[in-house]
Figure (cartoon, rainbow, N blue to C red):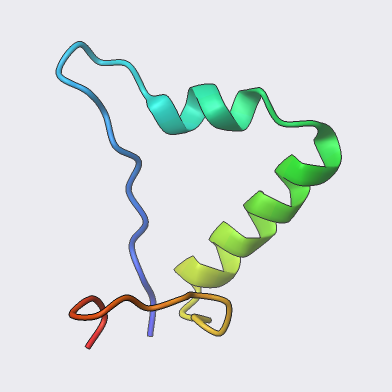
Length: 55
């Protein structure tokens, strides 16, 4: 199962995820990039599901 991960873009074209990601130190950014890649590949083992989401 492959999952499509899309970044949120505001109406003005700004990208809050990119701004946040770019502010991370290298070690944190690597962890986030790895988690995002695993999610895209269908590995949801580190996802915390909320009521009604993902069910």
